[in-house]
Structures are given as C-alpha cells and as structure tokens.
Length: 155
Image (cartoon, rainbow, N blue to C red):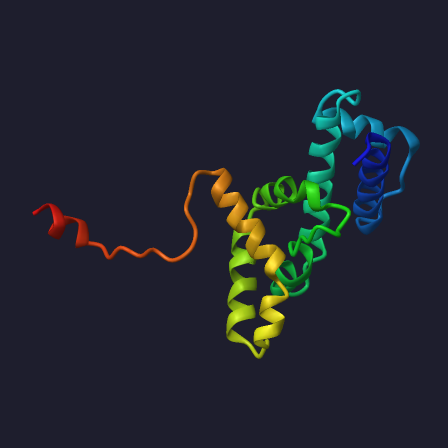
C-alpha cells in the first residue's frame, strides 16, 4: 500500500474510534496521538498506528465472538488491510481479553449451528493463525507422533 493511502486509512480508523467514543475531534489531536507510534515520516509508524486503531475498533465493536473469526480476522487477499493482518492480530491480542474472545469465537463457530460451509468460509482466519505460528517458530497441524513413542524407539 502506498504511504498516502496508508495515512488515509489510519486517519479513518482514528476518526472511527473517536466518533465511536463520542469524542469531539480537533485537528491537532490526531497528530499528537500519532507521535506515540514514532516519527510520522516513517511508514512503520503509520503501520503501528493502523494496527492499533483497527484492533481497538474491532475489540470495541465485537458483538458476537464468532464474528471475529468469520469477518474481522478473516483476512483474504482482496481486503485492503490484508498486508497488515499480522500486525492487527498482534495488537488485538494485547487487549485484556482478546485471546479469550478469539477462543470463544472458535467455540461458537464449532459448537453452534454453523454449517461446514460457513466454517470453511473463515479460511482466512485459519491461514492467519497458521502464519502467526510459523512466524513464531511453532508448528501447526496434526501431531503425528504419540507421546511415549520416542521413548520406545530409544529404549
């Protein structure tokens, strides 16, 4: 994403967050708040701000936890925020009960009357989590070795 568009998206996310909170927006407030993320001349500053504001907006607007899985974090390549998916999820996980909400969303998705097709439509979320695990050096998928099997082979 070009820096100009990124700046516009950050401004919109900030406006949405503050209008949601009923705050009267003053022109200098945005620039003041942006300073907490770093120097406005650097793209990474804008990425950090976007991730934070988007994560807070998702957190505050969460009505049903399954919506996090099916919509908010169901990142697909055609979404405008796809390239920032990892940063947004990381920020969401810093929320006090962010991980609990995701866990609840998964429980709802797999234990309530959602169809198999509806679960498959959340593929963007599952790919996101798989990518996060890979980035953290964790493995995903089915564990094929049973616990104790390695002691049998070496014993």
